[in-house]
Length: 600
View 1: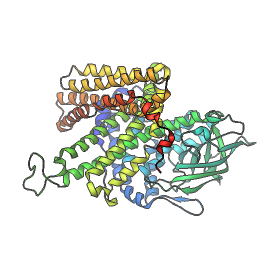
View 2: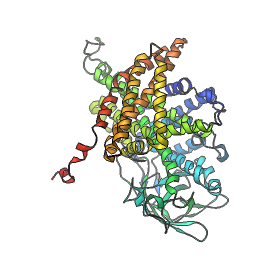
View 3: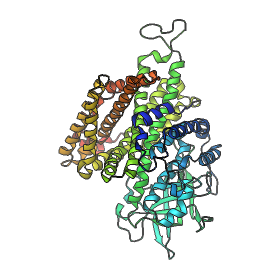
């Protein structure tokens, strides 16, 4: 049976020593985020995740969700009580606006909660997690009437929300959507169509479920320019907030899937269901992208979360399991064999995992802080600069974060050997649950193309140029510290590879767009290496300063410096290989005719 303990010490280090959250007290929402309150939130969230949510992970996976003949869905045993405890504790309200019942705390703290809950039990965490995105969309595009009717109960998690995009004939290409919305005399719309792969589409955790649904008006233009967004509740809501009649929306089936069995992934049927327009007609995709971008950051955090949970169990097994002898001679001669952790290849997998999880945690939390700055900073230039970086980093956190998260889960399963393949030990569930994060909310190839095809050129390349300058400046400054000079030099070189790859795209992608498509995933991974490198440089700097000031927790800070050196030595060399893959272009990749891929 697997176990989980929230990495609260590492989180506090990033929040307090690296991001220095206390220095943002001038921003709205940060006044209440004093160091003692932040530390208390981190510790209590970690306890809740480990003690309330994590024990339901394996049992929820084994039991799954069940659909009755009437279309109702029952979640695994314990989920409903756990969600009630989650709601009563106010975890879903942490970063939500105070005007709708939220606590108005910084988004960066919300990211901490997302990691802990997803690591403890990803299937459970998806229920309230999706609601956060729905709230974001309604906050940005919903009318005051819609906001007043739905947001207070969604913020409180009394009602949960979903996003309904995918249909049997379209996933990534949303221009193929067929779901229709017919205007009604009272200003509502009758929504008809079928949606698939709808996470948390039906369940028993709350009395109502608020669906955000993409659909077409009768006279809508073809393609993505003719998509509108509608709020379609499971139960109609009266003006006084009371629940009325059941809406014409139902769960037609639960998908049988590889992982996240505790989350109800549904086929949803809309049979003239009553809905209300969110935002402007035919501009629903822009409204939905607000929700999708929030979800993409959340999915990136899921990649980190599964990697962290798997790493904890892989490391524990490597310390306890005895197999063979150290290559340099018996490490514990009095024992019949040495623990696995003495073997260099086991150490390689553990150090890869440690370098990724701690680096990705720092990157995700930095991005959370940038979200806060983008929303709250007084100066428009500061808000714009933060928003540029959030836009650039979102596909990287989602794509690179979940690619590496899955690879980490696989490595940790490998440490367990044959025992990792056995269900009751829990390692194979980490692998299965981590796999979906590479697929949903835009498959990772789509994230790579978003990065290369949209984000690089946006606003004249302002975001990527700012990122280059930031990395170069911090590397140059770090070279003044003898402890950091090697790490800084290697990260600076990796940044140079990223600059060169970017220039190659500028020179070669316009003439042949396939060059951009062929190099997009390597470019996303290259950006991920540099972004994590920047985080490790910052963490090494903070650790060095702590040691110089006489901090008592020397083992923690020295481990940070060692892991930073490991990342610089073992991760950054990939930058050159990734650049060469990009510069290979698309010729050989696209040369074979389709018939050449026939196997029979």
